[in-house]
Length: 182
Image (cartoon, rainbow, N blue to C red; front, side, top):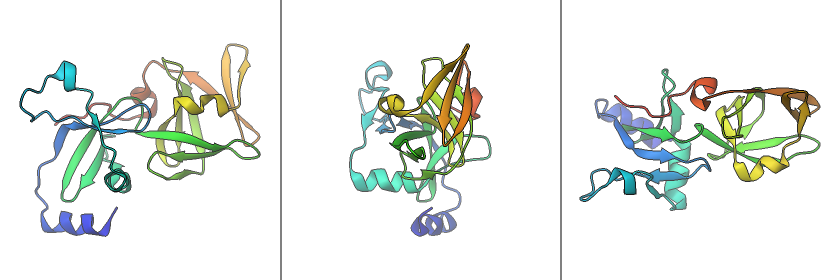
């Protein structure tokens, strides 16, 4: 977490958290949902608008973490901004396959270890990693070494086979809250 954020938290310890206006989509994009805007319509505007400024995206990524209840948030100075998560709290990009699978989160953290894996209801690859609960970016799925073993799908990574168990819910399998609210 940024030092300036830690100082702001100490200076203003009682700033209320906000919910429902920051989203993380399936591809690791931050989206602003401006519910306070005049004429806001949940159906039309509920998906949010992409945050594209590199400095803001990096700031969010450096100060993004989870609380003890599995609710992921961005610590924006003294205020926690809880994030609605479309697929998983972290989105993984595949940087290299052989001889070693190299994954990095959308926040720039290198994954060093994969602990468990699932195949989500929409065919997504969900992984519990040392960096946290994650989904592999859909454009990178073809780079993974996936094999069929009977009825099971197996991820071959660094000489090990990891069975991907089917799951009905990424949030349930990975242990996070997809839509945190007070």
